[in-house]
Amino acid sequence: MSKSRIYLDWNATAPLLPAARDAFVDALSLQGNPNSVHADGRAARAAIETARRQVAVLVGAAPANVVFTSGATEAANMVLTPDYAMGRSPLRFGRLYVSAIEHPAVRLGGRFAASEVTEISVTSDGLVDLAALEALLAVHPADAGLPLVAVMAANNETGVIQPVREVAALVHARGGLIVVDAVQAAGRIPIDIAAIDADFLIVSAHKIGGPKGVGALVSRGETLMPKPLVTGGGQEKGHRGGTENVAAIVGFGVAAAAMAEGIGDRNASIGALRDRLETRMRDVAPDVAIYGASVPRICNTTFFGLPGLKSETGQIAFDIEGVSLSAGSACSSGKVGQSHVLTAMGHDPKSGGLRMSLGYSTTEEEIDRALEVFALVNGRRPREERAA
Image (tube, rainbow, N blue to C red; front, side, top):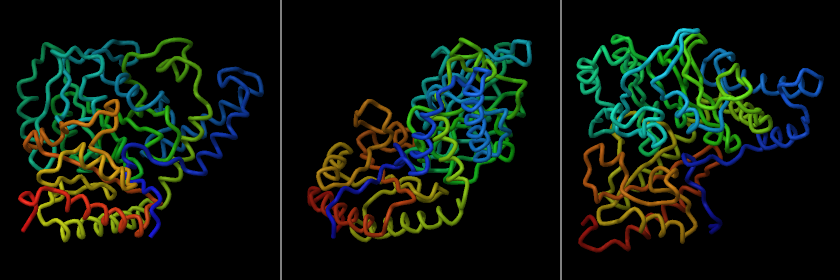
């Protein structure tokens, strides 16, 4: 069996789709500024608007409600603000509620002061605790402004799919808004902004096979929008200043179109590989913990721990053997530490977690090789830590 490297870290970033790469390179020849009125500018603008429609289709939104940003982090900082406008009238949100398992870009609260951010607990399965959210909203101070709630559609570490519609019902009953981080869910489960009753969605190109450095904030409508984070020349209808990154946006659009097509068949195949992986992991190490396995998850994610195995030790061991995986979120400047997601789920702070995430090009042979390495890593654990 080939010992070439095996990439199982698709949740950190997906390999660039060939079609997205080609579109990106071709778009570099669009020399005009997309905000210029001459023919060269109109050609660049047309390419952006095509991509806007493609991204909109992926999440069931109107193209006019897609605002391109430099990535999901910027989109999060844009939408997580106390200051909104409904048309020309200002509207203020007094408190932000975020689930304890959110990505750091959301969990840190954006433009809200730290004292204005409240954490929502989760269950031991990694689901947003609806009763806890309802209790928090019940005592939300009405004179402080409306509540803003941010939850993810699917967790980036466990893959657990969150009860977004149920969260939205609780939030809207209190007159608030819900922001949904759909970065890991887009392309892996069907997403429709109206069907899940979200007010805003955050999406990212490089998680679906597009270029790095581009994302989008998608709104339910055009009337209510956050105060701009980046101001300037009025690009993106005044919601995000700065000349658009045409090539990256075009690549984003092509990747979105590819992920919207054949989502069911593609993800069924990926899910079968993930199930094969987990079944054989349990055969090799009966004491392996697969986090979130008892509730619905996106098809490609396995987040696991072996008693006595530290995250950093496991990640290094897999890497030496040619398997790229991660110890949770990759957005922590390369640091490997305790997963805040596992802590929120009630696991011991010393629990180790490793994430394998698959993609459309993952093969059975790669899964089998990863299992060989898993058996090797398991065998290196102290004997007393292994299952009898």
